[in-house]
Amino acid sequence: MRALFKDAPRPGLQLKEVEPPTPGPGEILVRVEAASICGTDLHIYNWDNWAASRMRPPLVIGHEFSGVVEAVGPGVTHPRVGDHVSLESHVVCHNCAACRTGNYHVCLNTQILGVDRDGGFAEYVVVPAENAWVNPPDLPFEVAAILEPFGNAVHTVYAGSGVSGRSVLITGCGPIGLMAVAIARASGAGPIIATDVNPYRLAFAERLGADRVVNVLEEDPVRVVKDLTGGNGVEVLLEFSGNEKAIHQGLQALMAGGEARILGIPSDPIAFDLAGELVMRGITAYGIAGRRLWQTWMQGTALVYSERVDLKPLLTHTYPIARFEEAFARLQQGQAVKVVLYPREA
Image: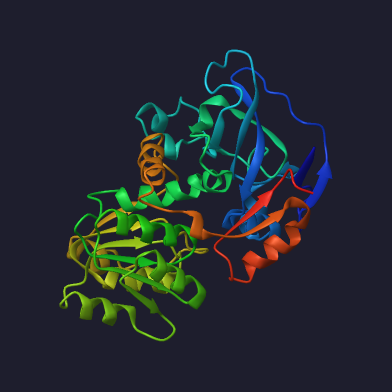
């Protein structure tokens, strides 16, 4: 089979022919039909400081993918051969304090597909059976492949008291931020204000339901928010950029007593006025990591299966896996949202 490897600690990836894996006890073999490139994959491709500190090659990368169950290992009763599945990328231990208190999404011993163990940029992959989410057979594989990152957006939007009937600021219109725009719109939020520096992404935010988009290179987002909310600020901040300035602006645009839900991760530690920006203003802050298992999957698939959220517009580019260099270049240029690879296409 063909598989896309990080074979050594250096920039780039290598497409290789290898033997298909065999599922062991509690595992399934998935025939991968579609796989989406994530920001994490870009870090691994570029071999930046994060990748060098986190990953140990050689390894097949890729953690956003879908396919069909080809075979099951001993003891597996669900899913079944022939089921169409998406995959939860976090493999959890079930034994640590976080897992034993129901917080599997922050398992202290998490292994991530495509980072700590072989992932889905391959024709076949072996994963724990418990990590499979069975989809209706008519759900497009491309949509099924991005249910995993969609879950990050769902978790962020629905944390705390949700967004229904509330004003929302979304900072960062990468794929997950754009998904959050669509979820917030489907969930009755308003007004929805979205910020970024990329006009291509901001146009998508408008298309997906943002009431107002702000290019922060051209406008002051805090002033825009205050003008739209009678000077009060928004009730909910959804932070996806990881940018220090955007985080501070988002908090400034948040009304006293509001909620900040932060998924974006700064590349370096940031200076932070805990008293002035949070404590004395009564802000409730949530750190968002991964997806709550399996609550977030239930919430997210309810939105997608019912067509209240349509993810297809986000699938902007597709490539056979042999053209992975073009696919990664397209994403790095900032002129794409979700780029899908087909491992089984020539």
